[in-house]
Amino acid sequence: MYLQELKLLNFRNYDSLNIQFHPKLNIIVGENAQGKTNIIEAIYLCSIGKAFRTYKDNELIKLDKKQAYIKAVVEKVNNNVEIEMKLDKEDKKKIKVNKIPLIKTGELLGNFNVVVFSPDDLKIIKGGPIERRKFIDNEICQVYPKYYYQLNQYNRILQQRNKLLRESKGKRIDLDIWNQQLANVGSSIIFNRIKFIKRIGILAKLIHRKITDEAETLEVIYESNIPFKENDKINDINEKIISEFKAKEEEELIKRVTVVGPHRDDLIFKINNIEVKGFGSQGQQRTAVLSLKMSELEFIKGEVGEYPILLLDDVMSELDINRQNYLINNLKNIQTFITTTMIEQLKLKDKENKIFYIREGRVSIKD
Image (tube, rainbow, N blue to C red; front, side, top):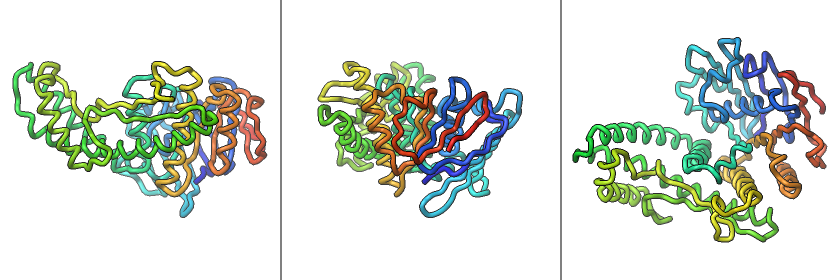
C-alpha cells in the first residue's frame, strides 16, 4: 500500500496543503519547528484515529481557527481508500472512509496501516511498563480492530472495579461478578498479546542478528502477572485470572486497587541474556528499538498481505552509519517518509524518491 495524496486545511501550522507522494521514498527536509513532523502526524492520524504527539485533537487545529480538515488517498493491492477527517474545537471529530461516515473512531482501524519510528520510541526500552503496553496494544489494534474494543471494555470494567475497591475502605465486598467480567475480557487480551509477542519476538531476533552481524541475540519476553503457558487457551487464562483474584483478594482490599490483570503486564528485552533497559548501552537500546520497528513491518505484512507505510520522524541522526544503511537498504518495497534537518546525512543510492523542503508551513518539491 502507499499514500498517494494528502490534503490539509488549518492543520497545525498549515493553512492549506495538497501534495502527492512518491510510492517509495519521500524525504521531508526543514529546520526544526517548520512543520515536518506535522505531515507525519497527519498521516498517522488518518490510520490510527489519534495523533502520536498529543491526545488532544484541539491541539491539531491551527491556533486561530475553529476547524481543521484532513484527507488521505491510499492505494492498496485490491482497492483505493479515501479517508477524510474533520476536527472541531467545539465538537467531536468526524471521519469518513470512502464517503461513508464512521460511527466510532475504532472503525477506522485496518483501513491502512502505518509504523512510526521516532526518538520517543526509545521509551519502549527506557520508559515504564505503560510505554511497552502501549506499543503492544497499538500494533495489535492495527491488524485486529476487535482488540481495540476489548481494551475499551476492559478499561471500563477495571474503572468500575477499582471504584468499588476504593469505596470498600478495606472491608470485604462481593467482587465475583466483576472478577468474572474482567477475567472474560482480560483473558482474550492476554491471549492476543502472547501470540503477538511470540511472532514479533522471532522477527526481531532475526533482524537484530543481521544488524549486529550475528554478534548479538535479542529476546522479547512478555512478562505477565498471570502465570500463563505459551500453549494456553483463552479458557485456561480465564481460570488463572480468577484464581489470582482469589489469591490477591486481601492485597487488593488493603491497596484498594486491582493488582491482577493485563493492565499490570510488561515486556522485557534482553541482549545476550542481559536486560537492555538497565544494562544495555545506548547503541544497544537504539538497535533493539530499530529491530522492533523493522519487525513490525514484517508482522503487518504477514497479517494483512501487504507492507504498511513507514514513518521515520527525525531518527536518522539517532542512528550510526551502519544502522542508517541497514534501514535504507531494507525499505525497497515499503513506502517510506523520512523527516530530517539535513538531507546530506542520508546516503541515498536509490534515485526513486521525492524531496519536500518545508519552511514555515510552506512546501517546495524536488523530484
